[in-house]
Length: 397
Image 1 (cartoon, rainbow, N blue to C red):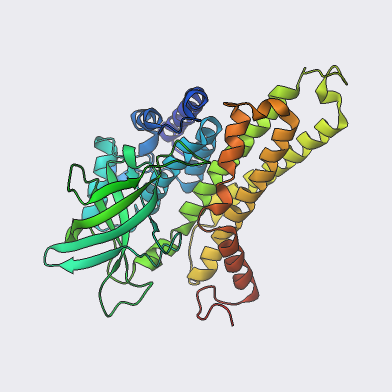
Image 2: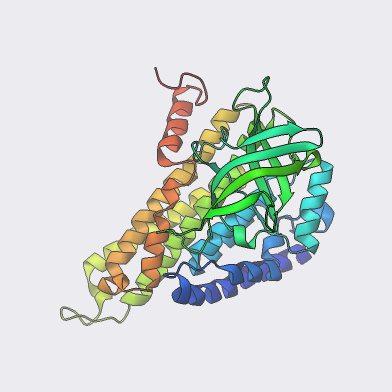
């Protein structure tokens, strides 16, 4: 790492910590109301954190995947919703910088670098859910491009978005699912009759500040040059970059668990009850803290190892995808256990409205539900380990 890059990284880390403190204060005021964290996203853009994935050849920092996970962990300590919203942007800007056509690459990263662009990806379809390679949204070919129709759920960060990466299934007869999957990089449509409408504003038990609305695409016109990948190859490109989604998502929930642990320590030291003058003297508290610390160290080591070294799809793409499931599956589930333990250590005060541990407890519940869900992750990991292709059909006989 050059001196200038090392200095910039130090600035980014310090800025992320400052922003996390700011975001935590805002979350105390707005979490229960479920107000979208628009100010937080603006702060991330203004600070340069949202632009860390701009390629080096375009004058950017070109953050590694591991560096992205470190920033996300810090931000999650202040606000899980903000970290998860940033994670979507990080996944898109980080995973695609080497695969895009020259024209789309120039458009995307010029916008991020010079215009403060924020990119989101509404991938979850009505009817097919998180099975992103088989979207129910359709892309019909027309002479000058495509027309998209369908319903997208969990459009995280839509209110702050300047650009969208939208997936749909091509209506070509010669392309069978999942090879009819297509992706488009478009400027966010605005105004009445633009082809995109919020049909269900976000209201979530967990991550309530993400603005993860449901969208209806109705006759959305997309120019041909907005297509991201060659016909028939989109699912392969997406699978070859699955590590970005799995590791960045895992980082958010590890960051939540790390903050829960810090809160448990803060609330325990010097605190007395009718039984003891210092709760830290209780064996149960000491054992709980030891378990949390050990779990966090394991999760951090696992994520760091995978984010640094498990990046190349190699020749066996399904096996690679299964490999990327390991940290996502382990960390999102283990983070729940750490947060639950921290909640017990903190005690009844955590139940109060507006408590930070209460917010974290709710947010961490979303981790195992994100693609790949627990069942899908276990299937991919188990089949790959046993020498069975996770994508062969029929899947179960």
